[in-house]
Image (cartoon, rainbow, N blue to C red; front, side, top):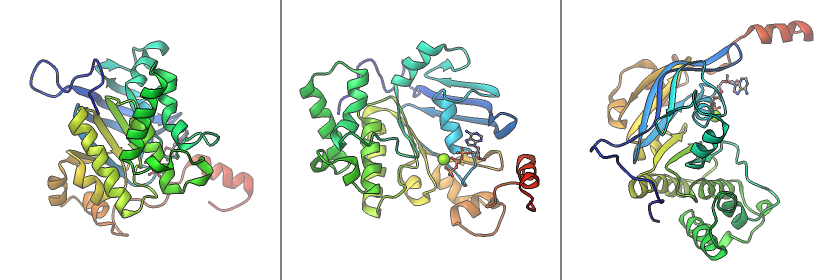
Length: 284
Ligand SMILES: Nc1ncnc2c1ncn2[C@@H]1O[C@H](COP(=O)(O)OP(=O)(O)OP(=O)(O)O)[C@@H](O)[C@H]1O
Ligand SMILES: [Mg+2]
């Protein structure tokens, strides 16, 4: 793969360019705050893992970074532009420089494997048919699915569909890629291949990768920096080695997968649930 035109791994100084920057950002839906006061930055060429229990706000964080969800407080910059200041057209331009692997597939079920991966190229580029074929097959090859190009989506397994989605997220060689649970449903071999592919895209193309995952071994293997979110805030961040040494009870429970400790398993009680119980005539 070659570096996309107009992109560069570093800026004029030697420090890598900051591609994504959350500065004391608060996120949520309506009155419900999911994450408060979050600071996090991602640089060109870096792989950042975002980890945390179910419902801790990882997908929410990605929605904010892609401009699908506004911030409640703080400043969120993508490619040095504050998302608060950008209009619809500029947001669309910024999004064109990003790739997203959605947590729930979002593949087009009436298209075959090849056309699913070709879709972003047809939508956003003026490449010839031969160039599209070359790029799509190259990316399918990288996820081990070149010979599955002709299959209908209904003919591929769950793990294969995940790999198709991965190929589609990176086919345009974006400068910033979000992978929401890229390893879900993959067997150990595919998981290792997917992890190495993510690392190599950052190494070879200088793209910034944000990997949202529960998978500790795979992400610790490839991440430069790991952020752990929980209980409505950033709990810890650092290199995989420094987090492995951490004695923080939250970090330890998360990394060790212990059933008891500060990491909440139950969804919290809310007024909305209590009201729903009242209307239904059941006890909260
Ligand atoms: N559209 C929405 N409207 C209201 N609340 C939402 C919405 N989407 C998510 N939430 C709530 O926000 C919280 C964080 O959800 P989010 O999907 O970001 O979690 P997550 O960390 O990605 O979890 P998982 O690991 O299970 O995917 C949850 O309490 C969820 O119920
Ligand atoms: Mg999620």
